[in-house]
Image (cartoon, rainbow, N blue to C red):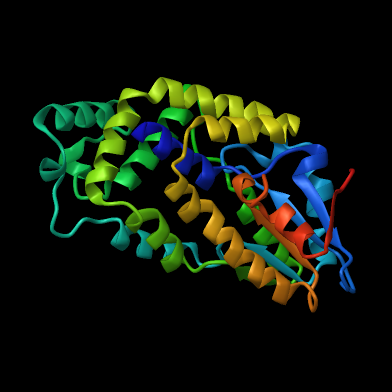
Length: 289
């Protein structure tokens, strides 16, 4: 169960929306002078594999602002802050895990990441879990490096077109959600489960990739649901953030045409951004390319 919750969180962070017809959406009506757009990104798939990606990218110069989960303009500063935040200060992995669990995680990290807990033991377990899942996936799929995120591609194109970049959240807010919404003990137990169930998690990621490239939102939502994310985790990772982002969009869109790209679990279902936009009177329809 803990592994399913952890992996659902991992999916929420790494995945976006999908599809030819369902990946790219136009938001209009309700008094908007110009339309805005929604696009879903997927951090583990190269932009070259996304159908009609260049046609989607061509919409960036047409809008006023690019809106992402974070403004990624200063990646070095973000990385420094993340490194500082993900270090445990007064706790060790020996305190969080039994002798058997420690040995299991240490061996798993050495096999997949190349370093064990002697080197990585001060990093918060949730970060180790994400690192472990990602690197295992990359090894299984023979990826030599993590693809450049589509979010970054859009923001770079926006800067080139002299568009303002806006982040829904600061790096501090996102780190607090990722690193501090669950106790270190529970994070450590999730890490143990991640190592034990790496093959199943990798299989789920492959299925999600396939659904993304087909534009099969129904399957993506079902695969996310199958991870059995707890109600509280979903509230923290998805629902509350959607509501906050929706309030920001309601203020932004009447004055500025926006190109918005966020993860798929933030767009899907009754509490997703697409439905929230419809609920307040906007027309949201797929862009056919």
